Amino acid sequence: MTSTNQVPASEPSDLTVRRLEQAAATLPMSDTNDFTDADRGFVAELKPGVVEDADGNVVWDNDSFGYIQGSCPNSVNPSLWRQAQLMIKQGLYEVAPGFYQIRGLDLSNMTLIEGETGVIVIDPLISTETAKAGLELYRAHRGDRPVTGLIYTHSHVDHFGGAMGVTTAEDVAAGKVPLLAPAGFVEHAVSENVYAGTAMGRRAGYMYGAALPRDPKGQISAGLGMTTSTGTVTLIPPTKDITETGQEEVVDGVRIVFQMTPGTEAPSEMNFYFPDHRALCMAENATHTLHNILTLRGAVVHDAHVWSQYLTEAIVLFGAKTDVAFASHHWPMWGTDKVTEWLAGQRDTYAYLHDQTLRLLNQGYTGIEIAEMIQMPPALEGSWHTHGYYGSVSHDVKAIYQRYMGWFDGNPAHLWEHPPVESAKRHVAVIGGADAAVAAARKAYDDGDYRWVVQLLNYVIFADPTHAAAKALQANAFDQLGYGAENGTWRNFFLSGAYELRNGNFGTPTQTASPSIMAALTVDQVFESASFLVNGPKAWDLHLINDWTITDENTTYRTELRNGALIHHVVPADFTGPDPDATFTLTRHDLIATIAGGVDIADAIADGRVQVSGDPAKLRQLIAVLDTPDPDFNIVTP
Image (cartoon, rainbow, N blue to C red; front, side, top):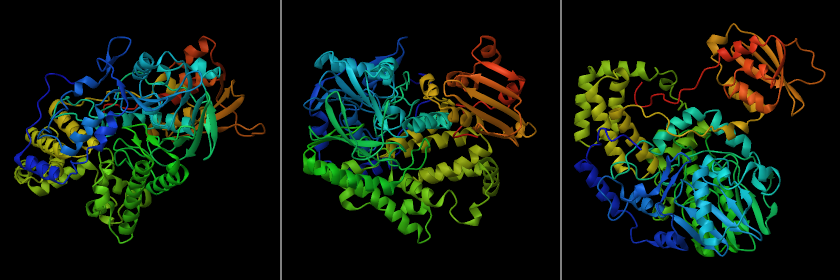
């Protein structure tokens, strides 16, 4: 939680209050079906709704959102307030006979399916602590059933990070707990959390409002769930890959038919159907929000076109045979017609955004222009589950444009702009100096043009990060934009920016590159991770060749550093290249420890874990030019 000495947020302006009142008047508030569905099947809640780690540190506190009750305050968009009221519902719920969900104990849901001898766990949350608490809550009301299967729906950390809270790596390796995941799962799960993990983690602190106070002027939710837990992240690699649609597996007597959906909400993802129970798991491909085509924390751009196509395929394959559908977030839906319409509405949303963006970009409009132009069809606007609580029409359209057209909008004036600080200095000079720019921003603030306020003051702050008046007014404008946002992650970004302007950099509160995720790195990924850290200019004049014999894979790899680039490849038996400077013989685990884990190679050689021939100092030269990522880089200041 945040410091009690933080500078308080500003009050909602009169204009913000009026805009929120106007927004409320356009919402279908008479439709309360979601509240009925969210309460259906309630068994029991965790009391208190707090989870701690082994040292007594709180890693999840649902009770801290207790202020999200009653009428909407004037500092929150009423649509987001409603969504948060639905998501703070916490506890064990019965979805169908033998099907249970843990909701409200993390950003995501954990689903439990009772089999012949135990229980199958789907998506064990982010942290081992929250997953363990959820399993204990289930067992307190359904009996001490052993875990007899584990399924990851896709490769995002909130769907596998708590794996060791429900089972052990030893039981999985021994075959006691089959672990199923879509093909490519480990590659994508590891690469996302390691390759760009530092930058993503820092931005995720903004996205989920990690430092914001939990009150009506602070964190309300992230739209997809309340926020992320902060416990121990783990990864147990799967033992069974799902590779094709129609593949059927039996886990503890439960038949499951899979649908592969790569490139939708995650690069590696799958839906699946329980034919003997007429139940459908939609993973994160259909929830109660418009989802991200490109998440604000950063990721590979999703494909809205194939996303809509896979939703159509799900309707064709399973729609008429489904009585209940559930997902890895939010609450289930019951009834064949209702489920089919929900899936169709989700499908139509992604198809419409994709197709209209393509139509308009082919008329010459840019992503930022299209985002302002697109209006969703009235029927979709009238459905709560297509509202932009997590994704948004605005940033999804820009992501679709980016997927097809890249960062450049075709205007040569934007081809070689000055970087932010140099651009800011020039803008401020043209305006007449920082004080003149702040005066213009104050007028814009009074006029309610908060978007222009933050754009204008961004120039001032990047030209002069010590300008207190600019930072204070910028923070107030961010507050107003946050209060007005229907989207949970937009609100968190705006309010987190305001928080840091007032209180300083809060860094990266959560870490996802945990030891068990690092342990899942392949040899290729270890060398790729190292190559991304090479400080090119420092390495220009180095030419280093090392061979790596990986004993547990019976394979030799070569790394070559030249011209500031670290290249690696497998050494074939008939290879005739130059001799290496050194050859290291070790296991994959010890390779990870010495290259990515910070273990000194000399220590590893001394204790016998690594054997070396040639000059081991050459490796020290390589390690000396690897940069350390910065999890505390600035965002709203230079």
